[in-house]
Amino acid sequence: MWTQSPLPLHEALSGIFGSVSLASWIFLLVPQLLENYREGSAEGISLAFLVVWFIGDLANFFGAVWAGLVPTVIALAVYFCFADAILITQCLYYNFINQQRAARQRKLKSDGAASDDPEQPLLRHNSDNIGLPGSRRRSSVSTKRRDSSLRSPLPTIPEDGTSSRAWFKNALCIVLVCLAGCLGWIIAWKLGAWKPTSAEDDSSPHPAVGAEILGYLSAAAYLGGGYRARIPQIVKNHRERSCEGLSLLFFMLSLLGNATYGAGILFHSINSQYVLTNLPWLIGSLGTMFEDTLIFIQFHMYAKKEDEDSSAIE
Image (cartoon, rainbow, N blue to C red; front, side, top):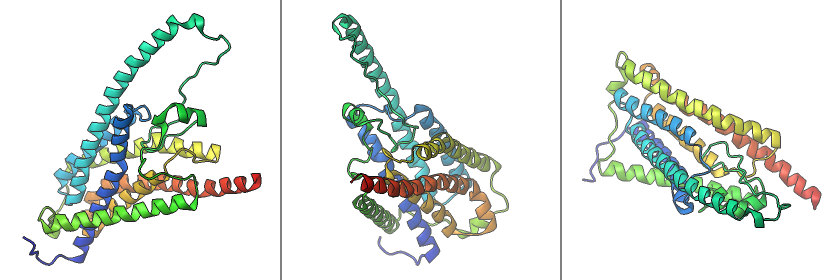
């Protein structure tokens, strides 16, 4: 079972990069699922944003299977669809439950309104969340204490502001994710669960038109979702000169996942027809990387500003 035929280096790297990408997205999205379950709420996530992602992931899956893309791309598509379905189910369920609870609380408050202090300000939930899982902002310290759902969806790796310690923890996490991805690919290859795609398929005359359409639909959904979520986030960060409340690790993992996703495709082959077949998937990945890179740069820029402000106050 452990005897394997020689594997070309570029095929091994293609599989490893794809596996690292899968590990990145698992580590990025699973904590969000667990956090929603623990808090009994999905309030920080935009349902419309998830639906757009789900449509893109469905198109991604069917297009990848139709076009016969590398195994790791198909495996990622399956995982994305599965994770999206759970997230959407959580949103629908918890929103319904919490709306009923809020309605009961409003009724109780209205019944006892006569005994309330008329000068007491009404407390209201205020969230500047744009819709990105992993990018929940906090409007104030008091809001953070009142609503535990505004905490980072990656609670196992706390971020200490913009300190060097936080950067070290995040870098260590990235290294561990890469190691997990490599180990996962080695196990899958040894057990025969991963098999390279034949290079002869890369020079097929024309990809299926339907697969291309689904691929571009997927790219449009990803880039459209990024435009509606990441671009307003970038503008807001620039306006406030701060990335407070955003998870740096979320964007680092997103960058890693998209970069290794594209690398997994290109290391398999750089045949012109093969690249053309995979172009929709590369566009979606590289486009999202560009947006995440801008936010990553903002983290670095505004961290320096916050450190200078802290030094001036001291």
